Image 1: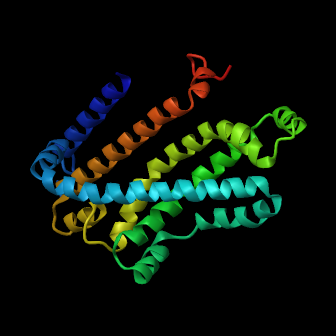
Image 2: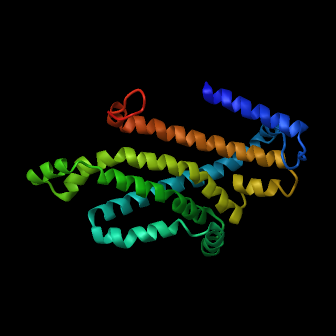
Length: 251
């Protein structure tokens, strides 16, 4: 309810400013115009959403697999940690304006270059949070496993992985928030469909309401993905949910 009230207040303020403010409707359409565009262009928005959704879904899957491989490797090997982690951090500083055209020149304008960009955007928070989860295992528990002759892989399977899973899912929720942005950047660098392509086509054609409608669809899609991951977190890690008090603090 508080979120709905705040949302209604923001929409109302936007409507009043767009109607009576100094900006031209071509710069800032009113929410009523955006809503009308959502209805009138629903088929166009839906078809382009399917393209962007596929890029985000497959890119997130690639990012999760890549992040888990890197996190487990550097967790088990200190030399790899010192060698790989600086490169992982540096990968987040590469501007998309340089990377996207290069990937398009190598792989064309199909799905593959967009997957690269979404995966690069998303894998970093998953790596960092998964490593934090792996490093948070109780040392006494690892010592107990070694006492029973457990190998590193057995410890990883039965102790480290369950402990790190909530942290990994938290990183995935962070990644979801930026995955759509990565897909939009990739589409703007070169594509023939997708919400990013629709956005770039709408603004020069003075279809500002349609561009804002595309942005609304992007935001709703991100919220749905975030909610799906939050639900998966509660289903896959019930022990983490039970370890929290009603106020949200760990016991």
